[in-house]
Length: 287
Figure 1 (tube, helix red, strand yellow):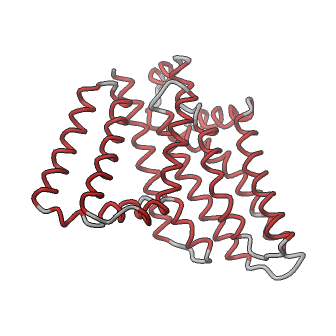
Figure 2: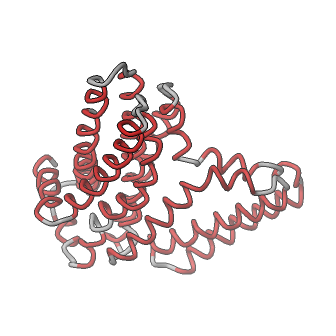
Figure 3: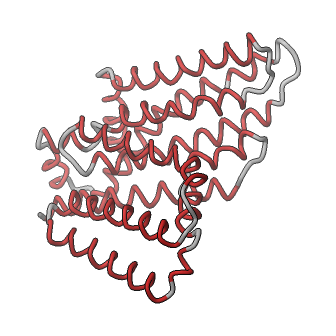
């Protein structure tokens, strides 16, 4: 696993992927740092972290799009199945390699609050807490991007799916404030979610009947519960959106609160999507 991790990590710097990812992320950090901390003389680096979280929408798909999709496209994924190493360890090595590339930018960001100390008082602890939250958020989004890459052989499609998924997650907080809390709105919302899950099942299994059955069963149960007791759906979809609003959980870190619950949430997301990636690859192995 260690050798595979090293190979994967180096691969991001033998092509332009790692440089583009780090360059764009640090460029946006530098722009907001200059505008907020230096020109506007705000001593809180947390404001920079708050403003650059949207950059993940572009950088994570760039970093993750080739992780598994390229292996499938080049048919080198068949070599992975013949290695005397469990698929789970290979996927974990790929994930850790991408997180390591991301953490290079995080380490560089840790220098910015120290620079501000030359200009006055800075709450370094609060700044580093925000950076820690940013790191956990990035690690969770990379796990999601890794899973999306396992669903297709095309890097472009992988990038588009990842961008779309992260965009929806980014907007969930705003959507939760405009979507009606009625039971019917919740049922429609959950129906859309079930449709999305059906699409994911199809990409994982390449079996349309299985995907359709999964969607159909879920939709049947959803409508059955709605007609029996529709009141339970009032406001439920809005609560669902708030719970899965991954980006909004960064706010507590921005406000100087080290949110242990958010850390557990991010770690849980990482475990779930790495596990789903392993299952997706295993399905391909035995298909």
